[in-house]
Image (cartoon, rainbow, N blue to C red):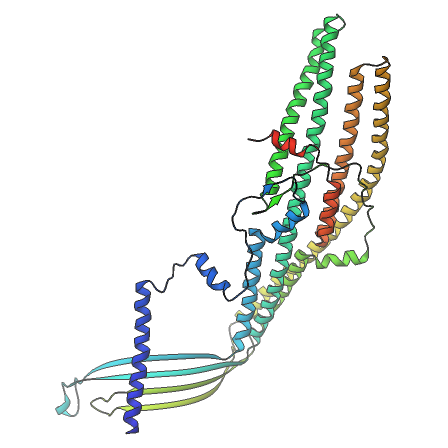
Length: 500
C-alpha cells in the first residue's frame, strides 16, 4: 500500500513539474515571457529593488539665464549628466559583481527532474517465448542537490579582486564628476577669452573709426595723401572682422558650456574683473602632495593595481586543491519491463569532493607569469601617473606665483594708463591735443586692462589645474572662479550679436 501511494505521489510530482515546464514554454511562445524588453522596461524592474540613478527629464541643453550661477549649474550638471550616470551604472555593476563572487561560497541548491519513456523490443533471447515481444515503461528521476564550497583559494582571490574593482569604479565616478566640473569651468574661462578679444576689437574699431574720420579731414585740407589714409581703413576692417569672430566664438563656447548640462539653467560667461583681489597663492605643503594619491583617478589606478595583483593570486591559487561539500537527495521511479518489475528508490548522498590540478603541462604557471607581468605594468602606469600629477601641481603653483606677481605689476600699469587718459582729456579740453589723441589713450587703457584680464584668466586656469591634480574641484574653487571671472558688462550683448 505504501509503495503504491509513493508511486502515485512521484507520478503526480513529475507530472506537475513537466506541466509547469510546458506552461512556461507555451507562455514564452505567447509573448508573456519577453526577451526583447526595452532598456526602460528592464530599468523600471531593476530600480524597484535597487538604487535609482538620477537622470534629467529630457535631454535638452541647459537654457541660458543671466540670473544663473556658475556653481549651481556646475553641480547640477555633474549630478544629472549622462557621463556621470554611465560611471554610476558601472559602479553599481561592480558592486553586484562583488556580491556575485561572494555568493559563490553560499549554498547552491539545484533541482533536476526528468521523465524517460522507454520502448523495449526483444530481438533475440534464450527464452524463445519472449522473442519479438515489445514493452514500454516510464522512468521518473528527481534530484535535489546542495553544494557548498569549503575551500577554493582561486575564487577567494576573485572576491578580493571584485572588491578592488568596485572601489576603482567608485573612484571613476568621482573622477567623472571632477572631469565634468573641469570641463564646465574650462568652457566658462574660454568663453571669457573670446569676450576679451571682442572688447579689444571694439576698442580698436572705435579708435580706427576716429582715425579714419580725422584722416578724411586731413586729406580734404591737403595735409595727407590718399594712399596713407588706406592704412586706417584696412585696420578698421580688420578690427570689425575680429569683433565679429570674437562674438561668434563667445556664443559657440557659451553654447558648448550650456550643452554640458541638461534640464537646468546656465550662466552667461564673463571675463576677469580687474578690481577683484586675487587670492595669494600658497606654497605646496607635504600634505597637499600626499593628497594627490587620494585624487579620484589616482585612487582608481591604485585599486586597479590591486585588481591585477589579485588576478595573479587567482592564477597562483589555481594550482591548489579545491574542496566542496555536496548533499544530494534523489528519487527514481522506474516502470517494469519484461525482465524485471517496477521499482521506486530513494538515495541520500553526502560527498566531500577534492579537485587538484596536479599536472597541466605548465599552463597554469604561464597564466601566472602573464598576470604578474600585467600587474607590474599597471604598477608602472600608476607610478608614472602619480609623478605626472605631482609635476602638474608643481607647475601650476609656479605659474600661480608668477601670474600673481605679474597681476600686481599690471595694477600699476592700468592705474598709470587711466591717469594718462584723464590728463590727455584735460589737454584736449584745453585745445592742446586732439580727439584722436584721446582715442589713442583710451585704446591703450583698454589694451592694458585686457592684458590684465588675460593674466587673471590664466591665474584661474592654473588654479583649476592645481585643484584638479588633487581632485579638489569643489564649491570653494567654483566660488573663486565666479568671483574673479565676474565682469559680465558685455556678456548678454555679445551673445545676442552672434545669434543665428
